[in-house]
Length: 346
Ligand SMILES: Cc1cc2nc3c(=O)[nH]c(=O)nc-3n(C[C@H](O)[C@H](O)[C@H](O)COP(=O)(O)OP(=O)(O)OC[C@H]3O[C@@H](n4cnc5c(N)ncnc54)[C@H](O)[C@@H]3O)c2cc1C
Image 1 (cartoon, rainbow, N blue to C red):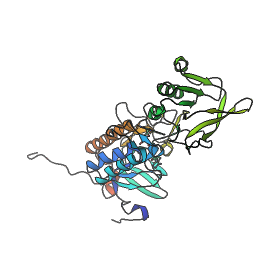
Image 2 (cartoon, rainbow, N blue to C red):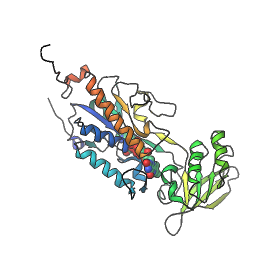
Image 3 (cartoon, protein in one colour):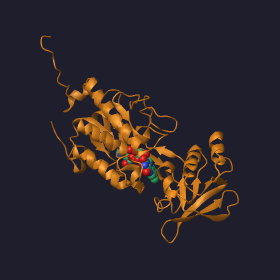
Image 4 (cartoon, helix red, strand yellow):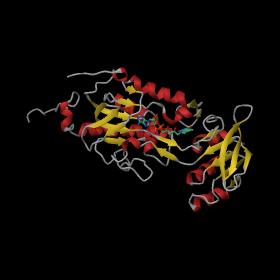
């Protein structure tokens, strides 16, 4: 058998059929890697060019169990990665361009023209918070501007905060953050809110929440300390510009699941989140599992992503144990059927 190797693939044998390929290098993917590595499945992780996932864009993480003093997001992700590596996980730090998923057959993953094969694949590509794309938004991320109310709300005790958005997540974030902020204004680009009536009413019932419409943010502006000091806004109808003093701003305009590489191959909902069988990580295709924020539009936390990463690893392990390898896997090294133990006397 030939064993090719190129720059970033010396660690892999492209003709081999892996036990498990994991796509995505955030809390979900690294946890799936840790569990499959400790089960001797030698996982191969395509962790993405932007490895580490969403927590690379934040500062303090105070709600992941096991870190009583909190930890910086990027530091936590390096530790996740190192723990998976310790048990033999192999990483390719690049984005998968294409996949060919099969129902119970050999799963194929492509980096350009390079093809990698596996008996199972765990999809862990996460999600992206939608952004406004205005100056200061990325520059002040972690310094007053955030996209996660549940994660960062508690850092804004006593602050004047704006929440940008008009949907249910903006209302939910506002209600949560209002427990900490002194004053909270929901800024929406239209007078009407997309949120359900009940969520909108619930938010408006909170004493320190008010609304400002129809305004669109133009810029997040830093003060002398380098942290957010004000937000420049434009009136959506008259075009008039103004500024609101605020030391916290949450952009709550939704998320986009990173399911583009599997689009049309695996069942997704209308927003692109991968569908799994309730209580498991199984997709509609045998041998294909999905974990973390690419599945989850409700909880979206590192600990829940890590939890489903563990579930995905256990589901993949059990699938490998209980299913015969796909016939075509026998053509490649690594795809041989598992040795069967024949009971004595049979
Ligand atoms: C600003 C901010 C602050 C947050 N703070 C907290 C917090 O304090 N506590 C908390 O619990 N949660 C927090 N979260 C939420 C948490 O980050 C997510 O819930 C969690 O990261 C989801 O993990 P994941 O592994 O599913 O996906 P992600 O973290 O999104 O990781 C997915 C990975 O897959 C990679 N990928 C995508 N497509 C491909 C591809 N085609 N090929 C290869 N790789 C690919 C991406 O590059 C990324 O590295 C925060 C989120 C944000 C945005």
